[in-house]
Image 1 (cartoon, one colour):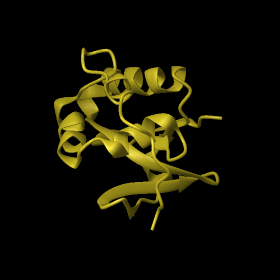
Image 2: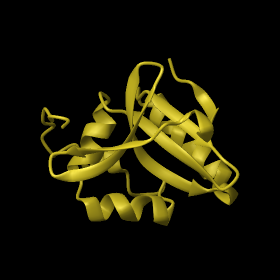
Image 3: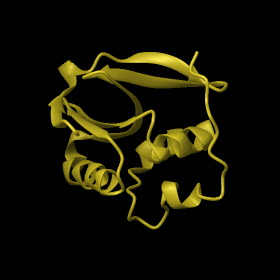
Image 4: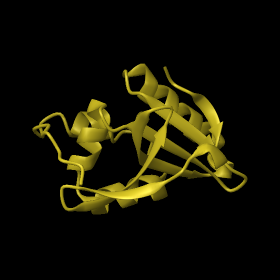
Amino acid sequence: MDAGLISERQIRPFRFFLGSTLQQGTCFEGELYGLVYEFDVSQRFQAYRTATQLRREGNRTLLAASLERFTIWVSLRSPYYQCFAAVSPTDQQMAPKASITLDSGWDKAASCETLPLKDYAIA
């Protein structure tokens, strides 16, 4: 079950390698999550809309809020995160800064459908 909106204080981030890329992760209620989007606090609607769309697609999602930002975390076991991790690190960095949402014309999940999903070893 998704936690809905939680305080960022409940997030204990850590860094890990997925393949050869450094990622941000957290553990919440026994589930491992990876950071996929970050929004400025003024982009609240976009953050909620993006998290809702990810949930509708069957992804376990956390939406964390602080006074400065909203962050969206997706379960490392979800197909979306596997796809997100398969996209180049440059594209990952651009997505949150550009405030790209899933219905904005470029759908990361759809653009990755042709990429093979791999079993990743988390080191």
